[in-house]
Image (cartoon, one colour):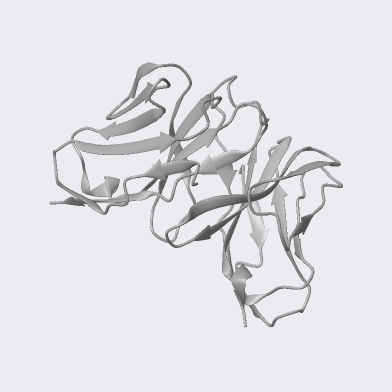
Length: 111
Length: 117
């Protein structure tokens, strides 16, 4: 069973709308959660990290974590064409130094 | 400039011919890692290293070897490459692997596209 699952996408949103990305994980001991953005043909870059239940906001991005439901999400407010990319959810199990990624959700923001 | 450098960027080779993909970072990072990325499967961790001479398996280590003799270098070795190792490979580094302490971005290299015929 895959450890980290994401919406397969693609997700198409109009410019200015909210894009909502979801991620579930299987390891209840996971402690650290990350969202990476990857533009086509480029390497991933970290955009958000979250470690405790609740919301964490950074500019137009909000990460939400619910450890009881083993669920982490990313909201992109006021979506811009430059947000068009693949978003990868990553989870660290806490017991070791492995980092497990989901398959990614491709977001397209249409003007 | 802080960076992770991978070489080569592209390689086409044949089954069974040993190859090495080099990775070097100039940020004095302790943690380094190798990933492969395949369509529909996302990034999968191959090996990681906590520090010099300390390495451990990720989720897909079969068919790969690594070494960490110096802090800055973390080469990926395919002793006998096979077609199922055709993939896009990324090397990454971070200050430490203690993920919960702080915002610990991994810095990724530009990737190596490997084709094994």
